[in-house]
Amino acid sequence: MKTSLTEFSQKAKLVKKSDRYEVYDLALESLVLSMTVLHRDKATIGHSHADTEEIYLFIGGKGGIQMGNEKQDVVSGDIVIVPRRVFHRVFNAGDGDLTFLCLFKKYPGRGKKRIK
Image (cartoon, rainbow, N blue to C red; front, side):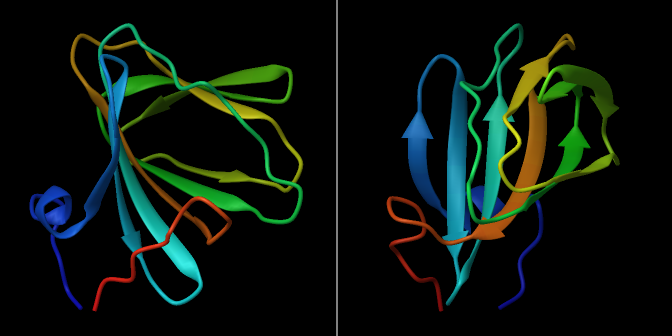
């Protein structure tokens, strides 16, 4: 399967939508590629995973990511690798949406629908 960033939200499944963000998932056999559109002045809830790493690729906007007790600024083009068991949370600090892709191993509750 091939897709572009502009087609991603049409090919992926909308899994969350609120005044905070929109989250779209493309599920594969064992991985999920997720796109989050985080709205202005909002932040993700934050979480950690006991048994998997995650890779974040920021593709639009600017903001920050908290990993453990440290916060780093992020802009479009930045890649952040989140180790297992590290709490992480993303903040939008820009004038518009902050958009990022996240690649992670499927886990219960995410990646139920497989895209062919």
